[in-house]
Amino acid sequence: MLSQDQLQHVCLLYGGSKQCRYIEQDDGHWDKYYCKKMTPDRKVIDDAVNDFLKEKKDQGVSSTKAGEPLGDNCKGFLPLTDLLQGYDV
Image 1 (cartoon, rainbow, N blue to C red):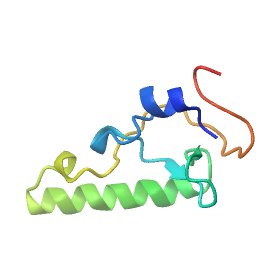
Image 2 (cartoon, rainbow, N blue to C red):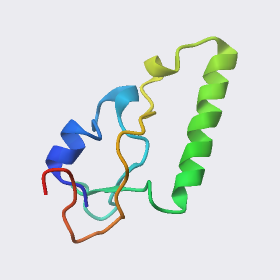
Image 3 (tube, one colour):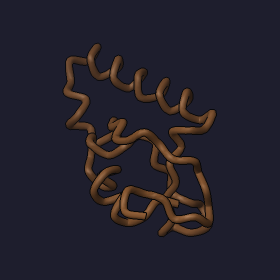
């Protein structure tokens, strides 16, 4: 799971379009977040973001104003559920 400092300073949780696209909240524990960048889900996430960017470009609308997470903010972490991860750990 990602540390609070990692979420706030690197992943930019609640940072609108600057938030990392690979963050996922735990379904059972709302206060835990994981990085999906180093999982097979990465391709699905990247494809969805690319489709979103293409759609907004075709509409002539700024993709950053939609508030969707578009960032690719770090090298990534394995989605470990019991080990605290981040730059401060």
